[in-house]
Each structure stands twice: as structure tokens, then as C-alpha cells.
Amino acid sequence: MPASTEILLIEDSLAEARLLQEFLQAAKSKQFRLTHVKRLQAGLEQLRSRSFDIILLDLTLPDSQGLASLAPLNKIAPSLPIVVLTNTNDEELAIEAVRQGAQDYLVKRQVNTEVLVRSLLYAIERKQAAESLRSANEALQVQFQERSVELAKAQEANQVTSEFVSMLSHDFRNPLTTILLSTGLLEYNGHRLTNETKLTHFQLIRSAIANMNNLLEEVILIGKADVGKLQCNPTEFSLEPFCRQLVSEFQLTISDRHQLIFSSFGEFPKQSWDESLLRHILTNLLSNAIKYSPAGGLIKFEVTAQATAVTFKIQDSGIGIPQEYQKQLFQPFTRAENTDTIPGTGLGLAIVKRCIEAYKGQISVNSEIGLGTTFTVVLPLPETLT
Image 1 (cartoon, one colour):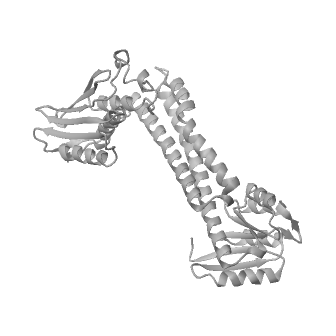
Image 2: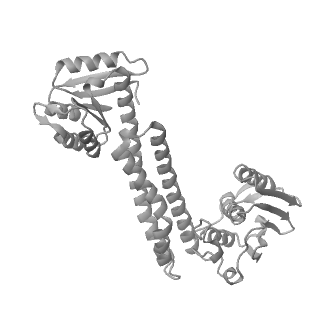
């Protein structure tokens, strides 16, 4: 927000305008500059000729009455927050004003400097958050359309497109429901909610959008791998410190019930590795080891340097994988029947497999129900790749 907040006041009473100006001049935390017009038409002309941060709108004007003033203002300045001014404390009118695009309403006889400044600043913040959400949703829709086209082309041979549609109906439902509920509450009941409650809803919206975007990123990674566009882009670093750093990151988030132990064997000079592919492989395997050990327990992560390859072994003491699912374990959207109560998309191991294939490596699994699972990944050393 700029140093001086530009306000357009549409109010036919000079006395009310002077009083509002005095309230704003008495504000100590912010600077405000008020532009006053008496008619709606004059306000529309001001909006066409210059920019403002917010509109203060009287609902009783010579050339417009009630909520009819909102539509033309929203048409000319859809991203500009509006606070309406009323003479009576009419709850139904206030709610309807919010539904039609206003961010807040003020009863004139109840206005003072503190109330006015707080309403203006909160209205600006709410409108900015709503505009950010709208932009994010539009960007997600574009991303979704683009990536859906790429995915459909990449999966023609194995019918992943139909599986993706099925997955969307399930895994997108929760974040979409969160977004719809939170935006609905903010839009229609924002004036009744506390600041803490509003902040919680904005955080829920951002988290849901992030979850949807992450899911799309995973799907497009699978699509790229299946059409041969997933390739190694190596940079030089030492593998052992990289693995230790990854373990440290996980140890910040795991529960007290889990114990993550890392060990390394052999020499690890600086070599050319693809950090992105390694992160996809190890992060998914470690995340699964933690996630599918709901009762906690020991998780071992070992990395061993050999003459021509490096072996990664991740072992947990979790629920295990049924034998009948182990053959299809690396297919997208495949999850074992004993994981129904544990959240997941069925994409993690598919991503692991595709990244290992890009490295020309191998992966194997050894698992028993109730005893745990061990994944072993063997990647050739960079100089042995041809």
C-alpha cells in the first residue's frame, strides 16, 4: 500500500464529508488523502481519470439510491474495495451489500477515527486477498488445461488419462471444497468474523491451492517421463552431505514416535548428480516410510558407495505392502488396500520409478505385512552413464 492511501468519497452531505475528513486527519498510524464528490456520476468520472485505493460510498445519493450504486462502480473498478456508509444499522442491507461486492459497511453515527481507519485498512486487505485468490484460481485453470492436454498426449498408450480424471474427482475434491467454503464465508460473513478467523481461512485457501498445484506438478512429471522428456541435468556436489541435509529436513517435521537414522559407507567425492531427480526419489521414499509407519518406529536410511554405483536403502517397520500389490506398485494411482485410511495420491512411487529410469538405475522392494518395507535403489555413478 502506498504511503498515502487514496480515498474516493461519494457523499452528498458536505457536513458528513468534513467529519470524515477530520477523522482521517486524526489518524496517527496512516496517511490518507480524500477526494470528495457529491454524485455517483462524478465518482465514476473520477475513477476513469485517476487511481484510488478504496471507495467510501454513501447509499443515499441524488442520482442513485441504495445498492444500485454498487454495480456501476464494480464495473469500472472491479479490483477496488468499497465500504458503504448507511444512516441506519440495517443488518440485511449490510449483508446484501457485501454479497454485491462491498467489503464492509459503516453506520454513520457510530463512526469515529479508530472505526473508520480499521474498516478502510481491513477492506483493502480483504479485497487484495480476494484478488490474489482470483488470480491464483485463473492461473491454476490455465495450468490445469495446459497440463491436461500434455497428459492426454503422454498417456494415450496406457489409459492414464481416464485414471487421471478419476483421481481428479477424488483428490481435488477436498482442496476445492476448502476453497469454496472459505471464500463463501469471507464473502458473505466477512464483517462478522474476527481477524484471527479471517486469517485462518486465508491460510486454508493458500494451503489448498498449494496442494492442488503440487498434485498437478506430480502429474505433469509423470507425463514428461512417459514421453521421454525427463532427463538428467547434473551439477557437481558430494552425495553424502546432500543425503544428510535431506535427513535433517525430515527430522524437523517427523513426530516423536518416529526415529530416522542415516548411515553412509564408502567414499563420496564430488561428482555430477541431478539434484532434482535425487530429491524426487529420496523424498518420496522417505515420506512413504514415515507415512506408512503410523505407529512410529525406526526408519533406516543407508547410502553405500561402490566401484560403479551407489546403493540407497530405506527401511521402515510400518504396515507393509500386500504381495499382490507389489507387482503394480510403481503404476500411477495404484495404492494397496491396507492404505485406505492414509492420505495419498498413488503418484509417489510412480515418480520414483520414472526418475530412476531417467538415471538408468534399478529399484527393488522387500515387504511383509505388519513387519515393514525396504526399498533398495541402485544408481550408476555419473561417469559410468553413457
